Image 1 (tube, rainbow, N blue to C red):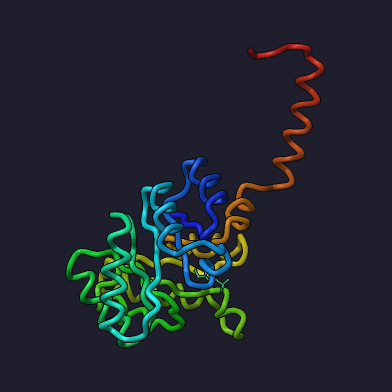
Image 2: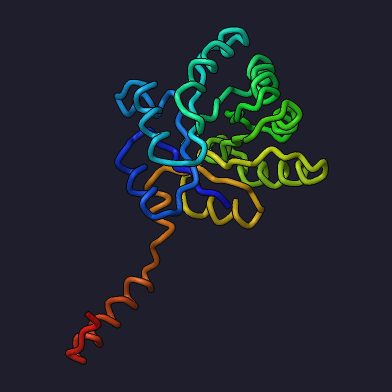
Length: 217
Ligand code: G3P
């Protein structure tokens, strides 16, 4: 499963990229606002840190203007992935862009039927929001299971990008279902490394090693 980080903050991206485990970045207008940075400038900077896809979202709601915005965004770097909302105009834009070889991430997906439409529109990625689905009394992971089943039934190449990930259990469930990608805030990715028994084990080994009086270097 590929790991994307869901942030527009440069330092956490650099830190995760340095682990060699980061496959891409997702941003959205709320994350850009939170960063306080200029959209174009910060997107260009992120694209220079990671080799994988960097999602940059259009903000227009009509197809014609989305296409114009996408034209500007895709010039930022070769690894820009244009993010469009799951609306009629968004999917029209997705179809036009992917037919032209541009990567597209269709966002704000909350139903398997919406995911089916996105795949038919040639989306490179579909982003079902599991956390927001859970918040509204549904099971976000049921949605991922349904999309996996449908995409496998028809051999759609669209990658399932599990988004709105709130905790490590979401990551585990997504991996068990066979989602292609997950995007999570930096903290959730860092939490994946942690286990109390790992910390305790290191503590014990270090204490015993100190008793030997030896050193490797
Ligand atoms: O990738 C989508 C994500 O940014 C939304 O997450 O936590 O705002 O629902 P959240």
